Image: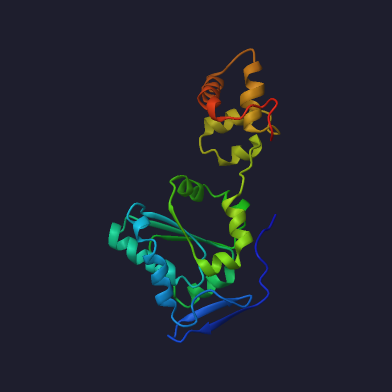
Length: 226
């Protein structure tokens, strides 16, 4: 499913302080008065979070004025040891930001124009999210693309064995998963089918150990609500 927002209008205007401002569906993605001041204010409000996190996820790009200030602050705190990932659905705005040379690319990775399923198929992004980065929502972008960002934040990853195989980087694990029923979910294999086997392999024992470790936090497969 492609959950990218529909763009019915797009133009670039110039602010009173002579900065370029993308206007999407009639919405200014930065202040038409002073984009720099607005961006600095947003980042200043997150300084305490930056002091505890050197990795930041930013939802919404625009022309990246807030991203540039975030890079500046993180560099002051951590030197070159920081990373920022930006997610934004609008590929055209991203490309224009690059064309106009407005975006500082230092330690920055931008995912633009990808739907939630595509984003959660990227192992680098998944590993980044697992490290629990600080998160900033760019207000104008977040409000404009609410459905897109809400879908990203609440996305439920596929649970079928055949989908999990794609994410495995270890050949032995991939081979083991391939021996299971690919139409089943991982939970179905672990909690229902695996305990009924007559003979167990080394990987079976590892899987059963996982069952024991997760019993307390895994809902019962019988008599419960889905």
